Amino acid sequence: MDDELLETSRERLSEETPSLRVLFDRVVGEEPFVRLPDEELIDVLAAPTAEKRDLVIGGSVDEKSGTAVLVRGTLDALLVPLSMFAATPRSKPDSSRLSFRDYGNTIAFGEYEAAVDAVLWEVDADFRKRAKAGERNVAQGFGASLRRLRLQRGLSQSDFPGITRRTISRLENGEVAKPHGATLDAIADRLGVGPEMIETY
Image (cartoon, rainbow, N blue to C red):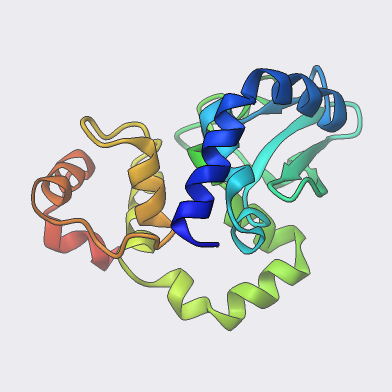
């Protein structure tokens, strides 16, 4: 999809957000369904299918069955066991505080965050095949290193003063190869490493 068409789609979705929100919540799910914030949801839904199939736009938790239903950007549902979200020394998943962040790249249970691609790797054979085919591109490069380092530091994509969440998301997804100048310095400063060190993670 070319940039002009994509921007037109985003504009139309933005204008229609109030009515779409009502329809979306009725079709995809109501309480206790949780979804991305409107702006992020619009961007994901307007994205090409190849991109949005690997993003999560919302979901819900069923404590009784010990599962979470995750809804992808393509509106396909995925059933995931809550047991796959193991506590870390820094945080423990709180399933009562489910949220979705970073334009569908992060699932959060309170302070606990999980990368959507890590979840998909575990539960979706098709995702694994696609990731293996492009594994070098996924695992290497500035964006992949930034994501690993950010998650290692316990930061969200909105924890970079003066840099939008969308910019960090685009960097991590490889939509932008590498920032320069002040942006690179600000990212490195927030991560507590030298700019040249980011890609070593």
